[in-house]
Image 1 (cartoon, helix red, strand yellow):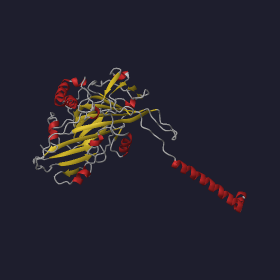
Image 2: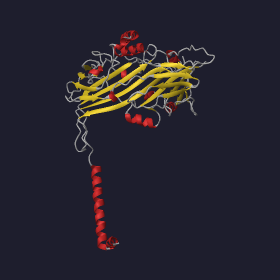
Image 3: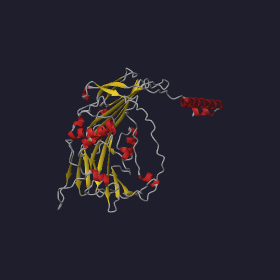
Image 4: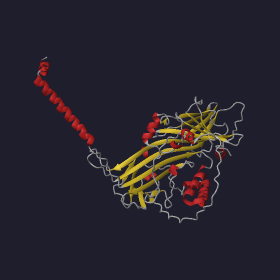
Length: 449
């Protein structure tokens, strides 16, 4: 009561209001100063390294031969492709002949792959570098990183200015999208597009494809990379990246030493088993340590009597998506976003069923699966906590990891010792011998022969 009486007096009331006004003014000034404070100055690192890590599994017949062809063609054109096919057919592709970019391939050949590149802002013409590696990588003490030589521009050739009549063939066939794991096709599916009658905007609405893969390791002038023509050793199946990696080269700081842990290590291959039954194909796999989630996509097709066809897409997503963009490295933030939207299967998931009635009984489809690892960044020195202090890192390293599988829906039975297989439930009154799908015929059937 006494306090209220005191406040009721005019002098004290004015004093109290003045104090409150002063406090409010001071607080506002502080907040305004914080809002006007310049952001922390961040300068680009002197040196940058990218390490792309991938494990590929495939039970496709001749997968190593096709992988060898891809490796050879990227380094030696037609004759390189033929040589790569020969090495792959004999299994020699697992020795030498490793080429840069295998971490971004479709994963036709089973194996473990690492692509590395380094760049220096103090030496943008850096041609060679050395990466000292831990012994558990089983590739000796170091890797030799080499930048490709810039190609000389070709002189302009003759120009044929004769007019010609462009030919146009109206597209034929249909495309259908299904989505979601389960025994039955969901209501409202499929979403179908008739290529013969569709407008340009219809294609844009139909091909919903998430995915935002940023650029990683690169083999370009000024970016020494491994593997290369001088060091094309294959990564052993027993290799591990855990430990210290040191980058050495002209313009690379002496402090460039980065230690990788288990989340940045090569992931195990995906062990997928498939079981056909009356409700479709049951897929089951073992969980993979450090996987953030999984995604599965199947693409198939069928022809009709009019020599046109239907392309069929199914994914494990709870939302429609053709799946093309999600079968590669993704950022941690996007993975978390798509986990929340149920586009990506959670890391604890071990089962998914492809509903019956989507793909032809005998044709199946091409199945691709990915286990997402994490994307990690390392830098030295660490970023100062005081925003007034500029951050001038000596170096930065980006590491990203994944494990992929390439197979046929229903399985091919050629699992090359990877521990995968297909189990069929016995069918009453049906021959147990079943014709396996031919990948080439499947591709022909996507839009007709």
